[in-house]
Amino acid sequence: MFPLQRNRRLRTNESIRSLVRETHLSPNDFMFPMFVAEGKDYQVEIPSMPGIYRRSLDLTVKEVKALWDLGIKAVNIYVKVDDKLKDNTGKEAWNKNGLMQQTIRAIKDVVPGMIVMPDVALDPYSIYGHDGIIEKGQIINDATVDALTLMSLSHAEAGADFVAPSDMMDGRVLAIRKALEENGHHNVGIMSYSAKYASSFYGPFREALDSAPVDVNEVPKDKKTYQMDYANRIEAIKEALHDVEEGADIVMVKPGIAYLDIVREVKNAINVPVSVYQVSGEYAMVKAAAERGWLDHDKIMIEQLHCIKRAGADIISTYFAKEAAIILNQ
Image 1 (cartoon, rainbow, N blue to C red):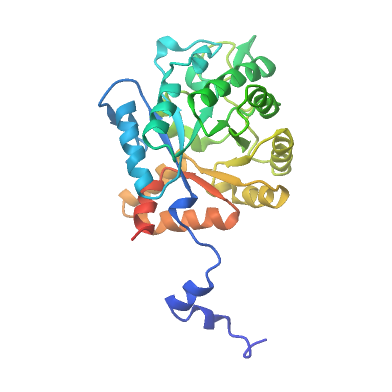
Image 2 (cartoon, rainbow, N blue to C red):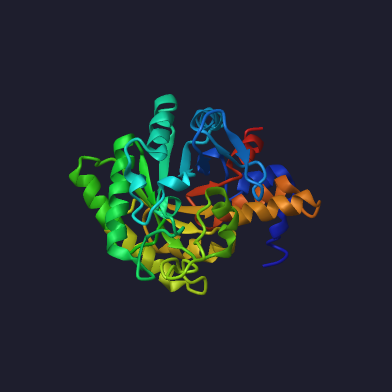
């Protein structure tokens, strides 16, 4: 009761604020999403994501070394697949000599301590830009799960520490976990995109991988039949609980800043770590506003990352990881 209690006493100066601070941020919290392309000595900036690049494998490995030196311990890998390798089955996704499999091996050879979490979804390999196999205008769940299982096994065999199914098909975590166990990959974990919403924040990412749904007849125009409705909250808890029951070691909420209520709900409901993906559109908005002088880039970046962690994130997958780590290491 005032004046016996004056809450401002604990805000008097930076020393006391630091002493009682509830949320602490470090490079250990971050996972860095990386885009890999064919070729050698190739690096192209993604126009809508300043500072983020598609890199060839040799330059990707070089960048991974730099991330490790900054204290970043995990990378999330996505590949830009040549159009001639795409079809409706996604079979290039489990090619043992495919770009993703080469990337996993190369990173683990050079930086063995780096946690490598390759993306598991068919959209980079699909001629239609969808996360699943299409038949008669529908995304076929069970056939897609079979494909995702083959993909996950190929990642595990290449040396992945975790597989990261981002597709939102029903039952895929259980199928992948069973396959990993049956093939001796007992220590390969699953980070499941459990609450992945059908969001408009993904635009720059789809530009980076050329993976947006194509506009042709008998192909769904969006991903709303498998990604979640952004109006729903309880559904996210149900999805996360189901994935944990099926064997997920980590669950993810995606996007981030606009979905922190979901992060807290999921964190309160489950007993495994929660990852949050601060997605491409969130990154692009900060970059665009800072470029125009409307926001202080570094301050808003660090504030947003603190907010994501405060909401309940144990891991933050963010394109800001490298920039934030440099600041936090000062």
